[in-house]
Image 1: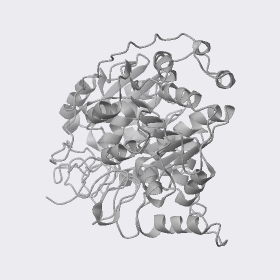
Image 2 (image 1 turned 180 degrees about the vertical axis):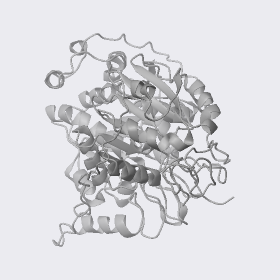
Image 3 (image 1 turned 180 degrees about the horizontal axis):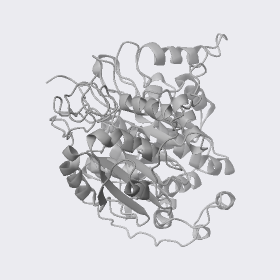
Length: 552
């Protein structure tokens, strides 16, 4: 079987049904139904995972949570009941956070007491402050030595790292703690500089943190509090060897907290090996049933899918549209712009500064449609986002839940819409059952009142628009002309951009971000020469094509 290039950083060794109509949509031959795997029609074919290395949807199951030996402390009703520094309580009030969410109310009394915690809560349930406030409160008064952080938060993606940093920075500042963010796609020299200057709290992706440790720019032997956020995704993305290697370096007997929106057997190893007598708390089942979220499965004809997608995108208000591959994202974005829809693409092929600016444009309303791969499925919070559209249906229940989790956050209402062609109906029905989601199924066509009622769809203006693209000129850090003081930083940048190990990819070598160059390995945030992993993926990882994508 021929290898298919992996265009999505989150693809798990999938090969797709190559030759059975998988290349539909925004590939060559728009609007055609059926077709071959190369530049075929619009409808798409069922995309089942057939590789031996794939993770079967809904087969992982829930793992049996560990039994808590020491009884957990009772939940609180207000932050004022917690044993936290006054400055942290004042910062909460200043930020308008007055009443703890359930996962915060249940876990904070125990995490503040130093207990290990295993917590599950859907996206938007307040997990970041649940672990972040305890971590900050228990670090107050300590000062980190250069290159020796005191607390570590490990996350799977750059976007989630930035979100966690943004969420905790006001509280860290209020108590005089310094934070450093360590992720791929950014200057490793600057990150090394932040660690040399001293940072009590480090938020990191596993691969880049390993690179900095290998360079001698960071040590973990003073880390006494470690958090794994979205641990299941780190397992899914192939980070487990890196994560365990990092956890083995932190101080023995320290506090560990593991939080995720979903927990399955993939995280068994972490729980059994690293959590001691943990307090276990689950806000809701992993299916993430949210009373304020509506789920709609829209049956569309392959020949009408393009027009239906465009009309939904032209609705009033913001929407995130998910597709499988970065190529499909770029094609749909271009199509929407040409039809008068203010759209922008987000995927791992974009540099981190581009991705950051695109998100900022979406959050401030300059862009109304964010067309994205699964890079946006976790770790992105946008206020008042009321709709998510799966243009390409996911094949994994967890992917569905995390995509949908971008809306109906923190008690707000939202709608998740999935477009399904006739060939995809059976697989989609199974996926929804596995995810524990009950959806309303409707047959729709573009221009019909029913489509407008459900999604707010309307005809686009047809007048092409241009969105000022994030400038690429300023993305690559300038090499310092100063000699001694900046030499190590410059060497770090040269290694990141042209050779050695690191997450930013290698010239002519293995894969970057979501995809991988032909002949290389599929890396998450990087990839290493000769096929070893970067932040995600392994040599030989293949990916399924989007129903909006043409064959490579």
